[in-house]
Length: 291
Ligand code: AHM
Ligand code: MG
Image 1: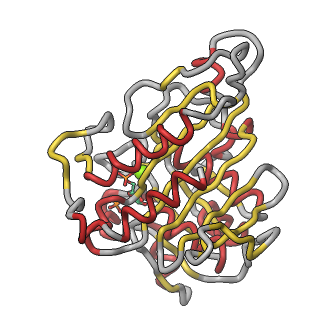
Image 2: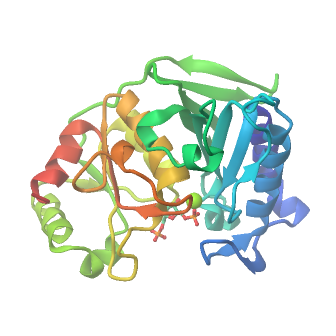
């Protein structure tokens, strides 16, 4: 993952120069316009991880079906699910974007595809790389959250913070407030409440960048269902689950409005979910309006 994301970061930095910004002209499995960097990033991850002896399955936002690479007997111990370039429409304007990944261990027997559709609590590792003003790798293997920054001069991710804990007491919310009329009554009431209670708003529109800010500074990030998207927009398996594991491992909460995201039993690789995550106090404040 670190090799692939170094290559992706490099492509993003040179995108204007190499003229690889903009849309490809085709839609991905989600019915969304693919950007040229989505395709390039996807290929880089597939190539780097596909060669690893212990990767049994690779599944991407950009591909309808997973790649079944190696059986358990052939050494395929892990499934890696990923969003190769989240927020890619922001690249054209040089806004921070990211790669999100989730790692599940495959069982000895049974169907590998079924095993891959495990709830997020079964993830053995998860994290993201943010291509921002610096390139940051945030990783959890279920024992806290560590942050690495890419030192361009030596080409390595260097550990800068071990055991990140989300701070509490930050009255900042992050949501696309233009959809207010399309949100549920509960979310509308929460928004009225924050307006009356001296909250501040921050929304980049790039999940990795928004969640990274919440991880370091506290507050809450929300992408609830709207009238047009009754399931929510964000994908459970390779967006919500890995972010939920990172946030919980940092002492925060990640829910869909009624239950932990990590406990949702998935029914499909590309299913969507509502997302409310951040510091426990601020997620709690949202939930007070949802009960
Ligand atoms: P993508 O996977 O197609 O890039 O979409 C996901 C992105 C997230 O990064 C971000 O949180 C969200 O879409 C923003 O959506 P909106 O423009 O509706 O606020
Ligand atoms: Mg995405």
